[in-house]
Length: 130
Image (cartoon, rainbow, N blue to C red; front, side):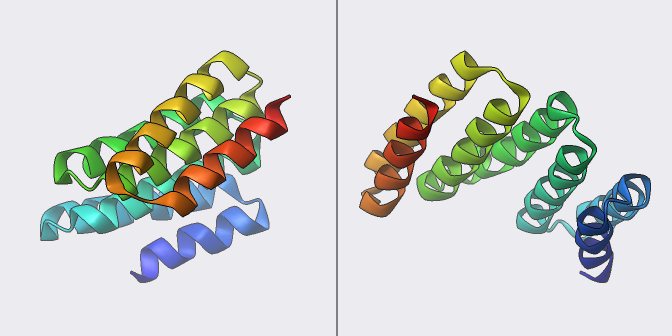
């Protein structure tokens, strides 16, 4: 957990290389422990580091890794939230088509989960695209 915290702190400070280093160490530790939820959180933290660097393509890859973990758990609400994160990364990267597709998928996942707040969040983000 400390390594994940260091990843987030260094990402916030804009020290991307150190953030990624600690993030990768955290991933290895969580993988060894079988902590998939913590691995997903770490992928999201590494995504944040790449966004701080301005590398939306690498950030998107990390977000999709987190999504794959949530998908394997079957938690529709977490899947929807992660897909929403992917959409915001795509917006930052300038790919509005991918962002729109991710938002549509996110909204559907939130609907399946019965999560009205999540659906509203997606609609709000969609409005921001236009």
